Length: 220
Image (cartoon, rainbow, N blue to C red; front, side, top):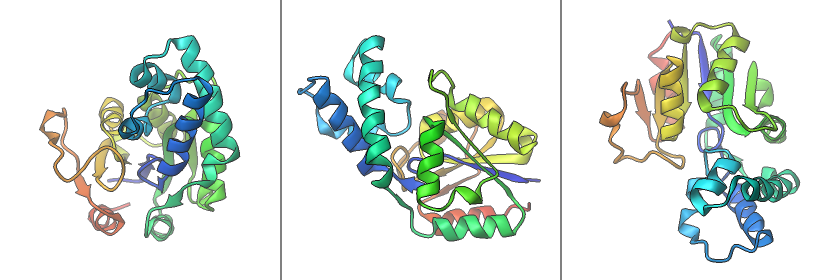
């Protein structure tokens, strides 16, 4: 029986693409990187910035940390306001709380930024536990999920994870938590082949209404 639901943030709870894309543009401008192809901006949604600047741009760890400083500065001042909850998400969270589910957030956004953006959109109070990464940015997605489970006092079989990327799914698998995939975010789409994953998702939602229908088949 499921007692808790853990949400990813970017691409699952909120469409944060504008703020993230502008943070990347600001960081790369300040790092004098001008040969970046903007069609790769979506790849920055999900992973921690330090990892993204190393793997996508090819920066050294030192340079990636410097780029991340610019990225965070823009995000803190402007980026967190350049987002919006997905249609119907606020209502869904309220309904889940009323039904007695324990709700959590597991994100690779830094803890303080995750809390601030959820507060800004007035949904932080819906969650019993919010876990982001620390300033060293060494936590993995699996780590954040496990920390939410601990904070909610739940066993892994009592919870499920909702996310929009391969990283979310792998993190859930590694934590032993069931998963629901959403295609309205930045990673998965309606053509995604889930057969390559160790475990299949409990359901695939193309919008918040479908997400609600999948969850309604479960019992808190």
